[in-house]
Length: 328
Ligand SMILES: Cc1ncc(COP(=O)(O)O)c(C=O)c1O
Image 1 (cartoon, rainbow, N blue to C red):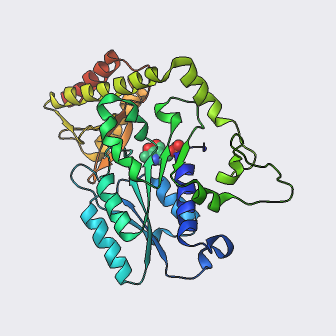
Image 2: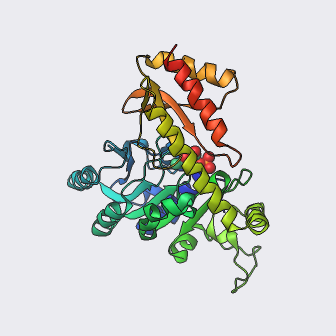
Image 3: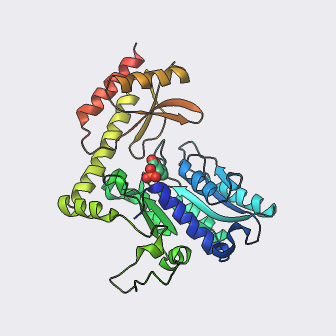
């Protein structure tokens, strides 16, 4: 368990770095070899950049691969970028794919990206902080099947398991690699591991740790996994309903294919600046708390159904209000 998705991704990249350069622990990025390069998509969350910058990789060595019309990483461009970097004497080491991008909910083609990573010998991390827990919903399950191919996955129980912050999680396929990055034995740290005792100080950056798993475990025990399955499915269905309402309103433009629960909308004929004003009005009058979106360089308004109390009536109210903007 981590403090959140950002921390999970940073820990995954730390593990990937250590796996690639065993001397990383002793000599850091001064350990020799060509500059390391990390690949992610133009729609990836900024926490990927933040981790790469904080770990000393440098944003100049992060490639933001363009996306297709449905906002998914373009695997052909990824392959070409890796080749170009190798030809330039650099060392590709990691791809961060996203299963549920923040703005549009798009899911990168993880299976095709995994093929590239296998061929090129790169670590594959999947940022599933927003999206991956929709695997609980029947209608979305298949979309997440390729995630088994990843070396590591970031999850956020404080999003779609509705746990109070902070509750992030990192799954790493090879426990020994996580340990190689984070175990720092000392004479005063004397806990011996056995089958029951996993000392999490050896699997992450924290020594003293809050009991983050308790709130997740308690909620699952209290409500049962089916309650979370049902809620995830309901949120998806509400997002689909909002998309249908937007599509039915000629004055509104749906900006993204609605894969998960992020729904981005533009009011036809309004400028980017006017969208910022509309958003401020919507939030100020208390109809709903929406956010800004920029997709393919155009500004819009983003709804994300992420609350287990949201109802169909709430969505209809929001759709009515958006229609009101379109017709005023
Ligand atoms: C795709 C994605 N990754 C990472 C994050 C960051 O998660 P956290 O706030 O838990 O660090 C978010 C948050 O919205 C996200 O949507």
